Image 1 (spheres, rainbow, N blue to C red):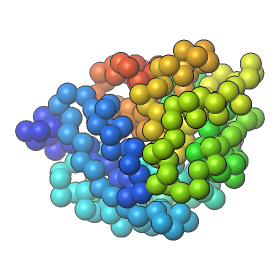
Image 2 (image 1 turned 135 degrees about the vertical axis):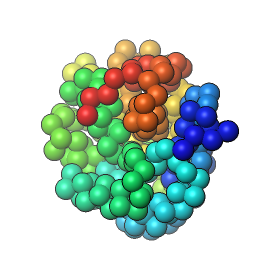
Image 3 (image 1 turned 135 degrees about the horizontal axis):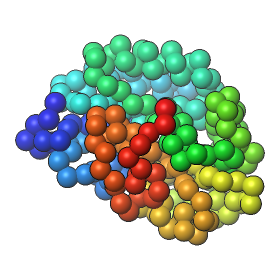
Image 4 (image 1 turned 30 degrees about the vertical axis):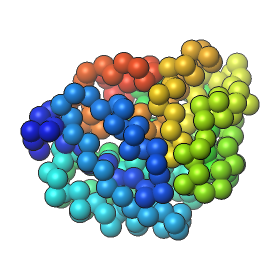
Length: 240
């Protein structure tokens, strides 16, 4: 529900307590007239992250949001499209009719919107995460031949990763037969570098936090181009 600090809309965003990048990134992307309200959940037990998110969803209703974002990349875990559908239903049930956007769904919509076909993926923590991501999106019809990771052991250490670290990782998987780069794992903050990375590699980069916020704003009818964050955020259309 729009209020005096968010006359164009209120966006509730659920992010991990261990994450120091996501709140500043969402603030950086925030259009005039939108109020971002941040809510935290604990991912100390990574395999319990979905349940941790669901417990916090009802708290967001107290700020009268126009949309609720679940900001974590669930597809980095042992996750299937069937599980995502069940989880979306559970999330929506706790949202009491407020529109919801899950980062995993937003990433898929972003890839479809820019016409991605063959994709190279970077996840921040482990090669296993990248392999799971490849499996998840392959089941949605994308080709994902290449993946890499930054081998970060703890979520809270992602704040120390730099744009140069991400660029070096993309260098390892950028090949002529790839048309799109993908970054999952919102703890790796690179939204302010998307344009530079796209210019360097000559292809679009879908970065999860940018994709999720773009998708959420489009869901509530905001079609303003959002300059400064790469090709995707200039798109006003969405391919579901």
